[in-house]
Structure formats: C-alpha cells, structure tokens
Length: 263
Image (tube, rainbow, N blue to C red; front, side, top):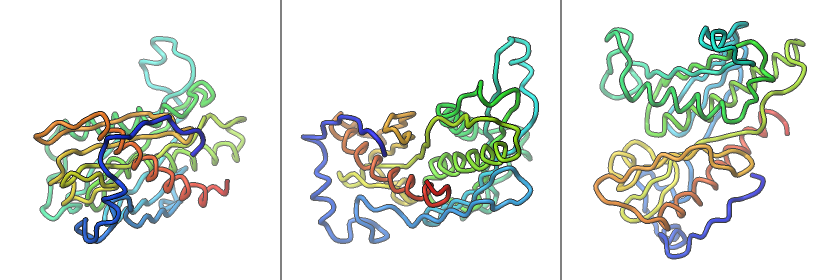
C-alpha cells in the first residue's frame, strides 16, 4: 500500500491472540479476515463508469456520470476546475424489513446525507479538480442488499466507478491527463467481546462495543476515520489496533483494484 504510518500498537487489544481463537465470529471468520469480495466493473453499460461491489451479503451498485458543466456556486464564486459529488440510497428491499423510499417521504434522512457527504469528501481527497476541467462527476451509490458496511463498500466501489469514468474520458480525448492522484479504499473495523474484528457484518455491527470506519489512500495516508463507542469508551491503543486491521483490509481491496486496472 505504499508507505505505512508509524503506528505504535503496544498495549492495545491482543489481535494475535484473537486470531488463534476458534469460532470467534458468527460466520466463522478469523478476527482479521474479510468477507468475500467480488467486484464487477462496467455493470451498467449506459454510464461512463460503473461497478457492482459485493462484500459478503452487502451489494452496492456505484455509477459515475459526467456533466459538462459545473455547479452554479462555482461559477458565482469564480472557482477554477470541476467538481465531484455523490448520492447514496438504499432500495426498499435491501433489508429484511422494507424501508420506505426517501423520495416518497419528501426528504433525505440525516444518515443518508451524512453518508453522501462522506463519499464525496473521500473521493475529492484523491482527485485534482483543476485537472478535471469545467465538468462535474456525479457518483450514485445504490445499496441493493445491506448486511453491514454499506458506506465503506460504497466508497470503495465509488472510487472504482470514478476511475473507470476518468479512464473513459482520457480514451475519448476529453481529458489530456489523469486527475486522480492516488487510489483509496474503505473498510469497517470494530471491537466485539473485547477483540478487534475486521469488516463487520450487520449482526456484528449491531452488537459491537466500538464501530469504526476507515478511509485510507494507497499512500497510507488516512482520509477519514469515524469511530463510535457504543456505551463504553475505548483507548488510543485500541484505536491503533483497529487502524492496523483497517490497513490490512484496504490492502486487500487495493489488490482487487489492481486486478481491474492491471497495474
């Protein structure tokens, strides 16, 4: 994954001990083991870039569309370059109990708005918007089945869809150089029964003492961390232990990206 952050995890959760325990997790995985990952590029043929990303039973369709204009606020403020924004939604049948479409409610939930902003922030951290030119990339992430980790799967899939769209723009002669500065991926980590675990499914997520999401660039730089204690605080060393697992997880996701883009 390129250079690594210098992290001291001494005194934290004993990850190695957790890996030696049998039946530690509900689905039989080891503490540092991800769910199976399947990425299908160009899943939607009408878009500039698209992907179906499957992480265990979580499935998200990510689509990148290109608009040859920029938002009005950029024109008004005379801001150079282009823009990238994201939308996120969950289909009514993505969970066991049907959820009403937010369009039918007439407003987005706070959770949806927060995830959309997270996806957009994450992607904008790895693209030079001035090199993008006076155009806007829309990323749509639609969860068709949810079993934990929908926001991190969306971020990882959104990056691949964006990169596919950028590659298409370069091949079509619309862009003369690649505005993407590096790759990124995202993964969930948590603490369950006092042990750090990687890539939580829904049941693990709903019972975890700590739930965290990490967005990490291929250089090893951290783009965003969201970590919440569910009733009991956690230590700095425990946070570092979760970061170590997150680095392992995104490395595996970067390997999946390499197979798609042949680098």
